[in-house]
Length: 291
Image (cartoon, rainbow, N blue to C red):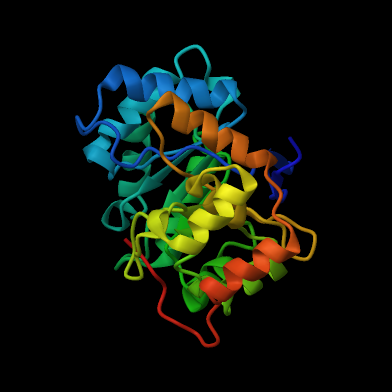
């Protein structure tokens, strides 16, 4: 498996290399699937090398963190664990309390990365102060952001002393707005993109890509599924470098396996050209697509 992405070194942590596909947990802990199946899916993903596990205090009001915590019992060191704080909990004291609550639900004493879930009304300087304290106390190793557009990310990056590891944003073949200005700037600054909803499950530009004739035709030719095609496209190298980690959620064993297998799918230039023709990249700046 050579489909990996490297998070740059920070002032406190060395660079770390991760599989380009991780595991999401949005909608886990809500009773949509048996809890034991959700736990087993995360553990299966770890067994298959999908070591980044993403969650948030928002998901099922902490229920997803509890599912993840159960899955990681006795296996914490195998995972790169990410969680996120609500914007209104991102104050100097409230962010510390929110992180401690997340740690308790997750059954761990540290996070590998802690994200501000989206920009809010609390000054970024205050949030960064809390994150720095959490890092100093050993409760988080890295900090990052989610749903930040170009201008917001530039400010955060400047204020953070260029220690920002990641920007987690919606990204899939049918929603390519970040390719115009946000993602190129992130690449210049060595900020990795984490792509949520990589299977086109959400966003203002949501489309039913699973039944799109061209995607079905390409998938059939490659003997893969449409979801695997979408994942392979999302994590494709650009100018020889991978800089995006996709975080699909899966519960069924066959879906977890298919996600892991997508790491080994290489799309040639002809396939990429066909996908570009069907879903062109934007030619101008667009509003950041979110869920």
